[in-house]
Image (cartoon, rainbow, N blue to C red):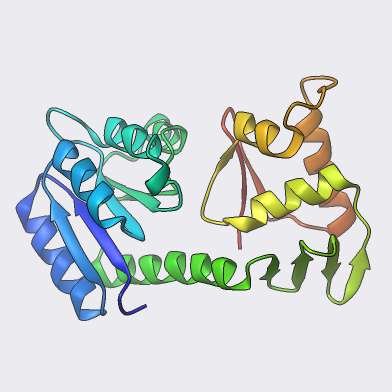
Length: 225
């Protein structure tokens, strides 16, 4: 993981110092900002691999900061992880809806956070390195040949089911919103019924025995590994 860039955005200086120290010991290149506006500006300059973003900040909070970052094309692939003392469900949902990839409740021990960061970046690297061939456990998805196999057993999936599975597997750290799934999988195709996505998700679960497709009610879906 040496060389990966991480941006910390938090208005508490002691948190910035503690996290910076531990992440730098792990070999990461760490940058910091103590407010949302400076964080957005710095993120666009350095294009970090991952951003650890505090939710409760003055002037521009973490949710607003994340939303603005996601409007930048250069930051579309950057992982954004919220750090917050607020553990309420609505706060976490707001984080995912804003474009966050994960939500960690404070107080978290530095070693635990490091493990989480390592895991997130490792999974992302595996997907990027494999390009159009994705391997998740015993599941292999071959984009070039439109083939799927699990435990060595091949499965022939209809194109939309394949495209949906590939999309979810392309970034296992991300919650894909229903609108994004419709746009990327169905595009301008005519959608029959409001529960088209739900039906395709159910079929994938039944055919492949994948219980790791998580439904986030009111938001979308995520493939958990």
